[in-house]
Image 1 (cartoon, rainbow, N blue to C red):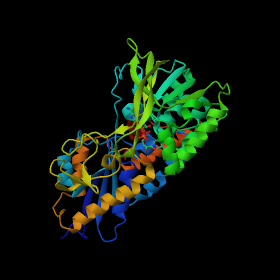
Image 2: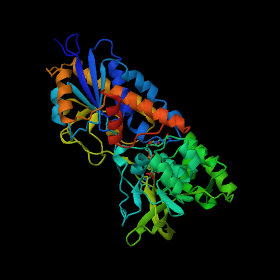
Image 3: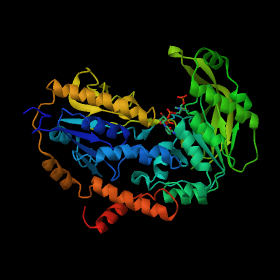
Image 4: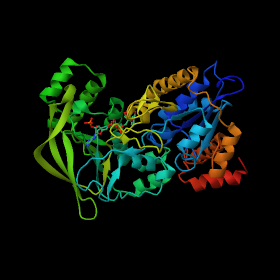
Length: 466
Ligand code: NAP
């Protein structure tokens, strides 16, 4: 009986329940000519990856993409197995034994290093971890932040840096009406941060944030966005590029930044100061961050024409006790799966994992999303990315590379249940989802998120079986 035929379903494990995992599942389940079963694993009890733990709490509309994922999960060939961690409860070898194919859609859960002295002094925090903390990720619940100072510095000029800056200056009443973790709403409300300095190492024309996100803060009446006129003026290289190569995002960003520079300081008591051509050189402090030493940069044309930043001797100190490093996410290796340490991705060809050294294909092993291509793009970017991976998988199926006998789903369920008693199903998530929304309705918020696995398990236990 061929795998994928009526009596022998193609059994696929998808590791990670974020956008790339769900788009992979959707594409697999949409194949009319292949009998397929999808088991999706996540290390936390709840689904949706960065849609739940990354997208900013005040961006509810973006989160409504989960309705599409819910339709996929409603397919009776789909199973969700939450609170199951690969490398702890189940490993790569198990997955290869129990499934015809495994798609790693695990994202990029670590953050990049700045590579400067005292980078990790207390008071200096990973931006991605902070985002996960205020979004109620149970993996990050125990972190603590000191918001008692007036100023925070956010290193980076991407949308994550912008999200963090916004969360730090939004008034508490507004945060309380979002689905921000209650521990974060309380801590921020009790804090005194009133100024956030964002440090962009290159110029305004190279900023990685998008105009929509910039406009969102620029249009607030209760927050000043301060841009120094001399930093928004383009250097000759950027001017040349702006004249030669039109780019809508860049041009809109520049227009808004020029307006902001002209508008100046309106004297609001909360402000975001956007600095450009400014790189942290070192963090200073004895037992805790007390200041960021910043170098002024200049741009030069590097390899392949890209504009790069290099430091000048011009230095300044920005006093602060709170630093967030929002300079990008980074993939982490999975035991037993090839990993390219330079790109921090799983080496692959159109989603099929390949051996790092000789490039030979590893049939049955696939990657999708950030761990496949690196941490770039918006949620929608993951759809074509995941479809490409699934097409590669199906090509391998048709070529006979996935023809093996694997144990039935029942056997797999027993194994997982033995290894992790507290696993969650889709029905469990639907119950938790309902409770979160009910609790939110009482305080005029979209939901109150569970931030601890124990609490989720207690609620599920009290409901009476799953
Ligand atoms: P990102 O867009 O890649 O931005 C990273 C920023 O960090 C860049 O400005 C980069 O500058 C800077 N950087 C890197 N290394 C640095 C260093 N050593 N020193 C100083 N600055 C450094 O990454 P991200 O903000 O983490 O976002 C990840 C992805 O998620 C992006 O595709 C983003 O658009 C997306 N996202 C979207 C939204 C949204 O749509 N609202 C929200 C959040 C995230 P260079 O350009 O000079 O390298």
